[in-house]
Image 1 (cartoon, helix red, strand yellow):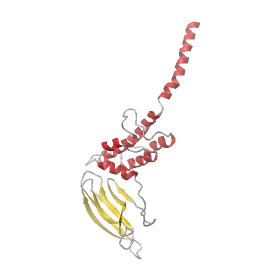
Image 2: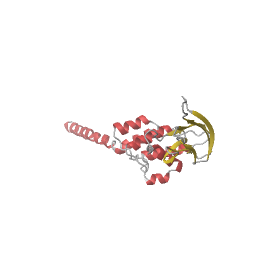
Image 3: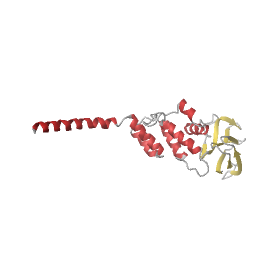
Image 4: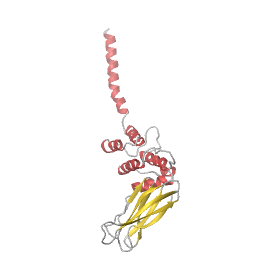
Length: 233
């Protein structure tokens, strides 16, 4: 009886000592990475922020099931699927959500590798580069920062490296989709002595994965000009 009791107690001690080791084995970078990938797949920005900010998960670690896919690669891959959606196809995760997650990952040091870039489509890479870029302010003065106005997959963007009209920069209508689109754009130009800017609207047809130069973000006499997409199809 005493021998049996001693054996039982020894066995329980071994089990108890082994249990923490198994729990610890379930943690670590891989487990944290799995949480990052799950948050991305669910479009859960707050969960991703928690694992990056509070749990200090590595923003570049692949998960266990897919060792070749980093969190950032997964985000841009989902964006590629969304950008390629047509007709009644619904996006896997909304682009605005993916933009927020890509920005978070980028701020924590994640970068697309050369191998990942080779696997991604042109529109997805342009979307990624546009999301993580920080346009420089025009050299002519601090009063006219470069800006980008987004509307789904068609955007109005200012190129801070292409000057025009002495104090301004070129503005483009960019189509990131794989279909030709027609966009309605309203142009607002500051009018001397007026309480509200003068405006005019026009329609522009842009081929798939192409751009159209709308004009300049400053008039020839230095007044501010804004371009706003009212809708596209």
